[in-house]
Length: 353
Image (cartoon, rainbow, N blue to C red; front, side):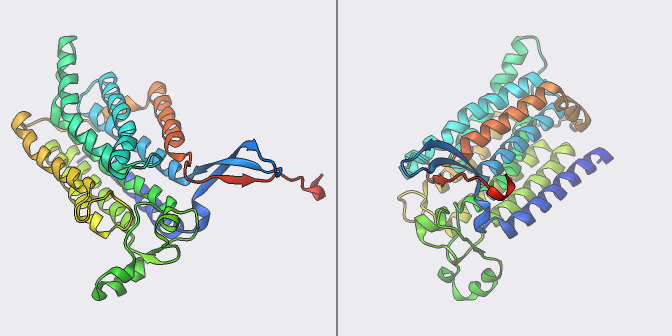
């Protein structure tokens, strides 16, 4: 592995370790749910009704943008034309973003919630055929052939990083929370209590949905964050070494198997199923689906990707503007709280006039 690849992987690792460590320490505190409040209309008592903009939206926007950028870099490194890679990412985003709300409504019967599990399920089912179709279109238009596995691997690695970072958003909003430590077997309680999250704030989902404010709960979001980032980093190392299929298999198996296992540690509502939730079934289906893909798209020996080419492809004004636009879209889509509001009062500070 060349110096550029080592530097790239090391920079990602350092940035993620620093961000996660800070978030684990601070985000359960009451200060870190609401980022801002925008006044919408004046009420009869002279105050303003406010729209809350959340850190949930900020961290999701970071996750969306980082995942899209990483997928683009890795795809372009494998020789996929930037225009084609952008088009595939645009289709995935256009399908998976509404799927996050639609699947949550179908499973949980709630109109004002999102599910990354449902969105990833749809994305995993769609992406092989999207890549295959894009490759066929490229050949029809006289463009280069597109190998399926490097692009699928790029998507899977980016998903692992994206959802890993996205779990920080869940810590901030107090959703996707773990079981109370007191509900665990006695032999587990001492160890888990030392690293448990204790949420503060009545507007946190863990407080208004389950009444678990101030109680130590299993930090399942932190476990997911660490495991997914480690899996994404390992997959990235394999990918840059030329083992695209192994990178895909590693990241997909780790993320989907953990989703099945981690839901046994969670206390938030996951639908009406008593033992095995719909999201766990989705992940199990994804694992079986992935096991069948090599029968349709045979794996083969491919040259290692050229990371320098991928970084050069993204470092253009058009791509940087597109990523900024994605950040703003993701923040506005996920960061406008529909389950909380605020009352705002404006005053003049007389001693500063």
